[in-house]
Length: 144
Picture 1 (cartoon, helix red, strand yellow):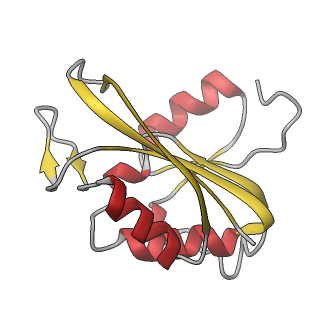
Picture 2 (cartoon, rainbow, N blue to C red):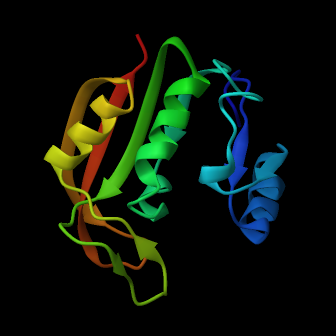
């Protein structure tokens, strides 16, 4: 399942972490993104951080700090990949899930201010887990 990679799985929901453990056979850390201590426990630990459709639930005012923590967690030349739903305002969907506002220019600014080097932002149409159409922003960045 991990294709030869040594992975650290993280989820903020104990219930979803249990499902992830059952499906992957891997242990899953149950913690909020804001609580990940990349400065101490995971400093320069990771070659890559994959955050598909996850950081988009971090409150907008906490996202800069989370991205700075991600930067601290990456090794030199480490890669960060994340996806966000495009919007110019925060919202809560019909399922009660919070989403932070994200535009290409805001994402560019957040990545650069975190200390990461922006590699690319790709934009594409798709749908969310609620089945509704959405525009996805995929960011790729790396640590120098």
